[in-house]
Every structure is written in structure tokens, then in C-alpha cells.
Length: 382
Image (cartoon, rainbow, N blue to C red; front, side, top):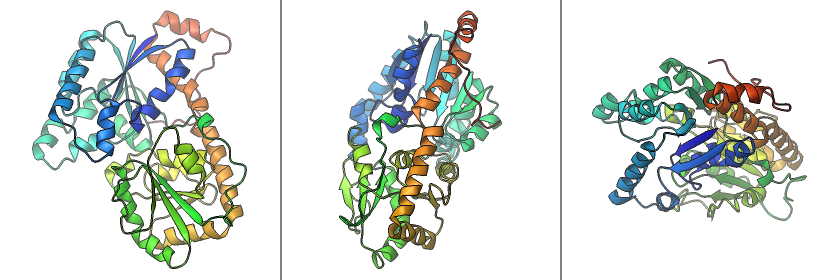
């Protein structure tokens, strides 16, 4: 089977890296030939993360490159579309390319992208593009969603087949930590990882951090945050790198994920929580969207809604290293069971074959010894 992945970004974009590129070697071992064609390259992401804006030339080149890819989609058994093929372009134009090629379509969402259109402040955008993502979902042969919030939207849109595929990590990149860092050698350390764009959510922690400063000596390490994130707090800033992120997280005691309870945030997939738990860290997060599924309160961390809950959760973890270790170990086991490439890779392979393989190949694959169907144990009935 041959698949063309039309991603939003290259390897530096977290959504494209974790939802697509991460699986390339795994599906290749299952006999799937693939090509990854990003809309924006890594230079665009570097400029975005450094606070710069893309030039009109860069954007036009991106559209021209994507249009060229769409004109060459014949010959592929399956197209994997991350979010949409042409941002800010009506659905009918995208769908016309797919219809002309007669290709099977899988579309993947790890964000509530539909809200970028149906809740846009400009009424004309809402009118012209408000139903764009719904139309793409309804036309796809399979809609992969990162959480139930997006899944229910796909069902309401009339999607033919929906599969919930959480964002996962390759556990080989996150060595098991048998015991936590000694709190005697350094202060209790909070960690946050993300992008400059999402670091604005850290402002939600200001009241809790102000209280915590008066009661506890601690460090707060921000990995990948904007230079002005929590500018008036004594935070430590670390540049994000795919090569060093696991090592940086391993130096923390707790991972945090504050979020406002708003529509866009309810569609997030909690990737940083999965990274924390893969790193054997307890997690403290806002009870928003999929966070409530990932964190098991009292077992792998805490859900904190108010500043008082944030303070009490962090103080409890700061004062009890044994609790941190137990929660970190439980979180690691949870990632091994639900959020790892090793578990989800075979499920994705079966989904791809079920949609894109010719019936003769599918029958042959089903009869191959050692090939088991994808587990539906963790799937929700949308």
C-alpha cells in the first residue's frame, strides 16, 4: 500500500511529528510505502517559534507546493490529510482534487480546528468557512481524532468512520527513571514543555505561583516557552530540542499543564501530560477536555481548577517525594498501556489497511499469521 501524508508541518511541528512522522518507520515495517509532504517546512516553524512572522512569499510558496502535490496524488492507495489540505480555502476546492483522483481519504485532527473557522471574529469567515471542516470530515473514508471532543464533532458532521487515536510517544526516547531526583541536592522543580504560542497559558498559574513562592523554595523550568512568558517570575528558560527534551524533563519533579475551559482548549490532546508521565513525573493539570482522561487524580497526579487547588496539589507533591515516585511510576505504566507508539502503531496500521488496501491485499493480510486486528478496547462508540 502506498500512502501520501499531507501534513501541516515538518518534523519541528509537534502535531505533524507526533501524529504522522512518528509512525513512518512502524508502518514501513508493515509493508506500507509512504511519502510525507508538509505544507510548511521547518524554517517556517523556526521563524514562528522565534516570534517572527512568515513572509507573503513563504506563504505563497507553501500554497504552490501543496497545489503541486494535489495534482500528483494519483497512484497512491490512500491520502492521509492532517487537518486540511489548503488552509483558509473552501472545502469544495480541496474535495474536488480528491474526487478527481478517486483516492481514499483519512483525515486526522489533534485540535478543534473547526473552531478556527466557526468561531472566527470575522462574520464573513464564519459564513464562508464555518462548515469547512465538517464537510471534510463527512467526505473522508476515516476520521482519526485525538479525543472525544473532536470525535463527537465528527459524528455530528456525518463522518462515515471515526477512530480515536490519542497522541503518543516513542518510549525508547524516555528512559525509565527508577527513582526521582534527590530533593536534598536542589529545590523542588516544576516543569512545563510546549511552544511559544501555548506558553500564554502559563499566565493562569500566576496567582498560584505567587502563593507558592511564599511557602516553598522551588524552581520552575520552562522548555520551549516564549521569552516573555512569566517574565516577572524567576523562571528558568530552556530552548526546546527534540534531542534534549526528554533529558530536560528528567530533571524535573512535577509537570504542569494549565488550560482555560474554552472550546479550542477542550479539543487539545494533552501531549505534554503524556510526555510528563513517560518521564515518570506526576502531572498537575487543569480539568479541561482530554486532561480528565489522561490524568488519574490521586494515582498519576492531580487535576486543579482553582489557585487554591493548584497550591495544595503542588505543596503535597513537594513535601512527599515518595508520593511523587509512586505517581510517576503509575504514570509511566499508563503511558506504556495507552499512549505509546508500541501499542498504537499496530492499531494505526490496521486502520490504514482497512481503508486503503485493495480487498485482495486486505484478505491476504488478514490471513497472515501473527497479524492481529487493531484492538478496540480503548475506542469510544461515536
